[in-house]
Length: 361
Image (cartoon, rainbow, N blue to C red):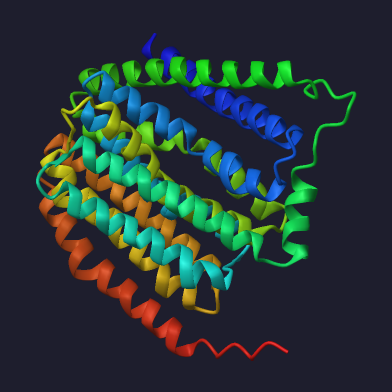
């Protein structure tokens, strides 16, 4: 029964996010708002709506571990699993703006989360700070995009055309209805998903943290999975990478920001295990993007396989730790003493062997 509620919650989150994005973007376009602005705000935020709904609902229900684990786990999943699978489909081209701007911003947000969580709690005012930074970041992106070429703006015009006069969603009443239905499904879906996740944790004898870091994190990242893989299959490989990096920044600033504000002054407690291990893994995953992205400005297939391998290893560690397995010390020693150094050597060698890009023009 709980599996059915979990699946129903996941479906409601995905359908609700799609309805919300469609209704809000169509309404904005009908009002004459630039497709560029709509693409950078409503559409970009829409793929992270499930994470925001689940984290906020979890905090309101007192399951802080699921709320925090969902965000941290989603960020780890986005980079290691989604980029790994997408790179195996086709090597992913990395736009120079991602290297110079978006990845450092994602890194900065990750470091900020670590600093705020060091005392074991994210206070409501710290959540408000994260939300304020998200607003500032969004305004910055819009201002920056308006200065770009007409060709860049035309991409958004082509991807987000206004609805035809005879389209079923052309009327403002239908668009408002889609927004209301989308929000309702997000609220219901998050409640069902969180409830089922708590039941899973009790039935399996593991903590809410582990469930949040794995099942819930993977489930709420389904929109990002669909978007990035579809973009890779279509050859829009820069979109596949940009979707993941932007989503990770939004997860930290938006999801934990709103959840912190919604905590009504009590703040969000951060589990010691998350603070001592999982947040550091999230930070390391963000850091490894820089050398990988610098190797020819693409994520090669072997690097995608490496990302997937690390996600499997991370998940295996969580399972062994949850079971209190006697194999955990040996597993940890093997990862730290052999696999990680070997990966560092491979990445450094790849960077040194990569020929310099010829200057443009």
